[in-house]
Image 1 (cartoon, rainbow, N blue to C red):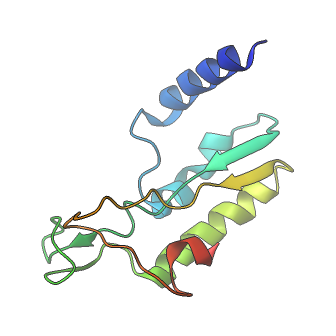
Image 2 (cartoon, rainbow, N blue to C red; image 1 turned 45 degrees about the vertical axis):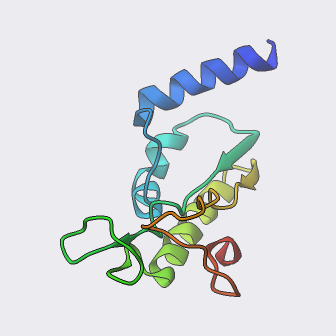
Length: 124
């Protein structure tokens, strides 16, 4: 099977299992990981969580700026959820590839890059 055919088949399978929107929050990923992995044998699992977790929301849960809100998911909760996902995926024996959090566009009002040892890309 050509790589492209394999990728297209896998994309269709992913969309059937969880919808085209992806996993969204790492907490949702931790809740859904058993369903997503199913009974299949996995050689490689490429995953990403963080952009939705680390946006800023106001008291009503609406997107806002860092100055006016708080992180949607506290860093410690994000770490706990990501750790749960990684622990479960490791049990498959697959090679795990974590795609660091999607770059935050310059001037994005609801998110900002977090530098230093508490940065999301450092918690995995």
